[in-house]
Length: 232
Length: 273
Image 1 (cartoon, each protein chain N blue to C red):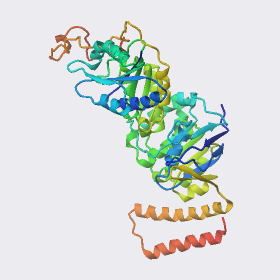
Image 2 (cartoon, rainbow over the protein chains, first blue to last red; image 1 turned 135 degrees about the vertical axis):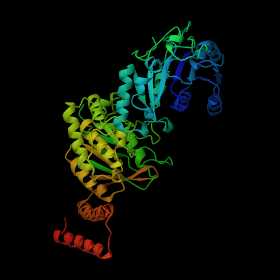
Image 3 (cartoon, one colour; image 1 turned 90 degrees about the vertical axis):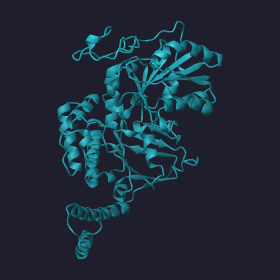
Image 4 (cartoon, rainbow over the protein chains, first blue to last red; image 1 turned 90 degrees about the horizontal axis):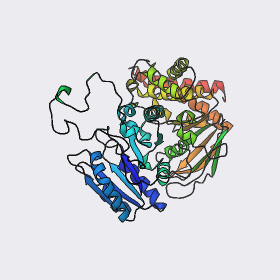
């Protein structure tokens, strides 16, 4: 099973990119299945089912971080996709705090960023970008060429990964993403996360709400700490 | 790789009919206009060129460089991308100061000594816009005309792109005669999407778009070049009137009559230009 993990901030265009990619891959005979991991509402599974007739489902993470939920359910999801006769599973995850990375060893990790989100965004998000295999930049028709070039250079500086620019709404720049998916490897058991994201193991996530690092234990940080988080 | 020419190979218009124009070839130094009513497919055509379309855009057109399929390195590395596209969007999203932003872009483009390149870019931009750009102001504070002038200067000097696509610069509030005059000094391919007869007639060729398709390619004749001179004069009359309205002046019928007559007399005395 090829596992394609697609992450990115809300409204960055993940679903639109995956829809365009799905259209191209189905035309080439790829057998796809789709899973959406979201917090408490999602209807993309219905979109993929009705638009393309592929097996699609969703899972709500509820009180958990969506990436935490992903760790718990992805093994079952791969088995489900196999049972459906798929050879490639597309997983779209809701990006929330932008610190975690849902990517699995051997999967193709795609981070979707919008060109309009500010040139420094690539420096602001951590493992979701730095542990991905490719960055897809959407909405390139909305920014000037100069800014597009600077945004791209900032991604390369922060993560050193391939950048593919798209105007997914008009289906532009999609072929190269589809080609990367076609050439992706199969995932193998045991599946492992690529990095160790700060999932719900800290005192704050466990419910301690008092402000100030002196009230907490585990991974602590003060205002003066200087650290660019890369998910290692 | 030195670019000698680019070619646009016909695809399909909106209704699925083939482009009547099968192929357009442009050599270095050529100026091309793309004309046609709103919605006729002008912007789609320059997007095809900007993306090096390879039957992978809605029009299924193809773009060749030196008669060959462009290398993907052009798309993978922006510092090698030979095409700069100046779109109708005139707003910046970055709130960096102008000089900072230009320095970053010059560094990414490896365009030589950053300081002097940035100065040259600002000087070029300031010749196109009525209100000089203040280098310490944020990119987001620039007016529409200043933004467009800066984007053109950036593409020509920092980008040093051999092929420059400009989408409707007449709407940008910049001096377009000056822009054409300055741009002609650079050995590049310029492609204008335009509704402006003066720009269209100063080009070597114009592609006429209709229903999403490339309908015709017209080579500008010697007669049309003379017509362009007259249109330029008419444009200057309009510019003069516009400047006076902008300056808060009132216009009288008598004055307008005098201006028209003067411009008539000038053109007669100059004969055919």
